[in-house]
Length: 268
Length: 246
Ligand SMILES: Nc1ncnc2c1ncn2[C@@H]1O[C@H](COP(=O)(O)OP(=O)(O)OP(=O)(O)O)[C@@H](O)[C@H]1O
Ligand SMILES: [Mg+2]
Image (cartoon, rainbow over all chains, first blue to last red; front, side, top):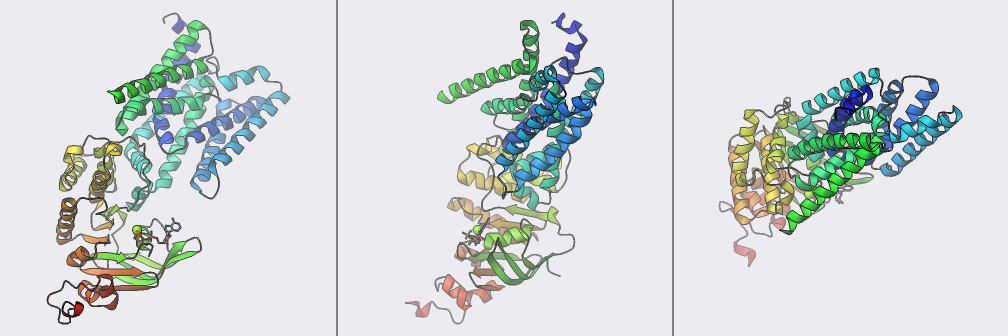
């Protein structure tokens, strides 16, 4: 552990990753319950396209990815709210187009080695500047989330009741979309664009196996997510395997354990 | 000035008109029961009053200051997800959010929630998972939530569905008590006998015609007599049907 932390890039990965895991878990509970899991996935693919274009244009990746992913989050949310359009299909169309564009841009400009790190993440990818920005953004996400926690619960639980009582669900849906977009952008360099959505979905599913109240699901998901990230990061360092996939696998093992425990509890 | 006034209201869904040309006022302190056949547009009207769907034409005007902060609502059907993890207390507390909104519920909000849970007899379910309750228990939880949100107006869409006889009687008593305290009640109900006993006004909706008036007027109207199966409970009534029914 001490040896692992003698590298600056590992410390950066540890700080950014822990914060991102926390953000992702909190938002993940909402996204899973709202049946918006696919939006997270779609956004990460859009993020990949944005990263490739930023690299080609030689701009700091975060500055391109943040506005592009935010914009995509608004569009995807609109699509899913509109019942006339098939939201699932629309997300698939947008995300595959973004990935295709990204790959073409990357291959034209000859960035094939970076491509791998974009897709599957790399602890080396975050610079000092990026890390500071990531920390600030994650703290913003967590604070906003805590500030609106009660309203977010009410709107997620029963949208028409909150609307009848004078809350405007669209405002909170936008807040959720913004927070999701930010979380995905911050997390995708470490986790990889293909795997970041796992960070959003796994902890909430795991927590929901055993927890019955909303608050306990939130707290458990947050804790599990951070634990899984730390386990994954450590394992990936010592076994010399990529971080993103290791974190996903540790989340998956956790889900299986929780699922088994819930089955055993049900049998008793 | 009425609390809510609807004029020439026309409502419906994509090309299908459900309510047309409906005009009535709800005054502060009224106890209005809305009755009528299935599919006559009662729920649609409730959603209109709450601003969940907007009228095709016509107007719904609210008294200045009613705002949505003072309305409690019990829906007929909810869109709540089957697997949503939440405790009964969390659900009831969410009803207090229109009063005050802070990151953490205040003492007042918690007390309000507990008070209303006591009123509908679910205090012992406080920590239970909402999804693991029976249908009638869930209905009571949503009722407690509606009570928390109520300030001036309580809108109930078939509140006694799923409640056992004792709970329904308790509910009618509770609603009557709230009404005496000055809260305006709008209730959709199929229980016509009990409705005419408690309500001050009746709105009867049927496919093409509406009746709106006081309960006494309703009981002696043609439409009312028919709907109550000629069973007028009124004993002051001079032209009671009781005699010539058999
Ligand atoms: N979301 C919807 N989309 C399209 N049509 C609808 C929708 N909801 C209701 N309707 C139609 O509007 C009409 C009125 O429905 P509404 O739910 O208002 O009836 P109701 O009077 O509340 O009936 P019930 O006594 O069964 O509750 C019905 O014919 C129904 O088919
Ligand atoms: Mg109805």
